Image (cartoon, rainbow, N blue to C red):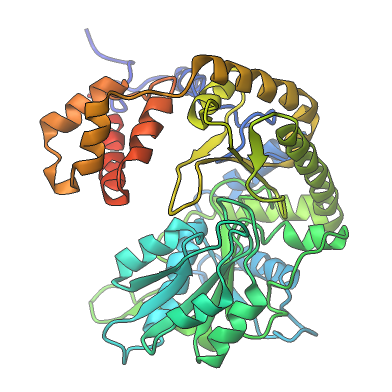
Length: 491
């Protein structure tokens, strides 16, 4: 019998379009909900009717347009320039500002934007054999990824355990002659607090260094919150010494994945971001970003989204989100044993537990069982484990439901008690080196935690408890191995 369906992506005979779509919908049924205000990570939902249809239609119009050659597809060039201009104007650049010559590029996401910011800074100093970047430990992990990919040394700066910000003096002390870039966050993803950008940019400028502001998370919300009266400190191109900024449009601009913008104060700073190559017999290659071929679909969808909302639309969404943040923070304050790790400054609510009987990882599982999907964060360098809530406008109608759900989940977590791993397993996690992990040992650990078989367990508290017990390097190796168990081909 000829195979025409099943889970394989390449059947012997083609499958009718309607049936393929039904298969995809069936697979999607097991995903976290991307709409409805119950998912506090990974997706950004404004809760606006008709937006998905608009973005999908715009995407379809340009899905097959290739960003490799802007002279062949001027429509894409026009939309990309418009997105860069909108981001630059929102972030203190453009005509009539102190940064009138801001230029930029559209990338596939925040990680690509950060990698390119590091590349531009590194390549601007070809005289340095061992370039370095200075990044607070609260800076996004993508900077570590950039340092790894680009062979740049990473100099981490600790953050204060109370303010969750780096001390400017520590940033200054970390700068060396080999430093090519100093980083600040507006805000940091994990805790949602804004670094002292003006002061960090000043010490970077005094040392003759570039300063990148990672505003991937907050760049499209902080300006609107400031217009609403929030005390947002200076963080953009209005700050002297800020040389580049990244902002993700697929976050709070509510565009579909994946669209980010990397801005530079002037064209000279951007020049080393490009890659050009003519020493081969094919077409002359010049790329402003990492990818060569780029679908125009995401750019067109982002362009349509920005045009549809306009400034007044984003201001309304920011006001709704601000109120939702305040409501969620109040819900956390109302539960005994929980406390905010930081007073909300943007669109993040981050909390921890002071009660030893209240295991945060169990609490996360209890919330998940009740339909609320949050993001657990492991303890790190004196900072406690925490729960991260990314708040969007779609959350606002759900705020009144979240408080009772959180209290109920906390009570259930107390009743269940903290996760208790076998002492020998904890001892193993504390003593093993990454090199000592064998396939058999990894398989045994995974089986004991319910990992494998192409799916994660419904409850992750035991996994997170083991990861938290492991030193950082072992934690990384375990993550690689555990995710590798999930990512296996379907034959």
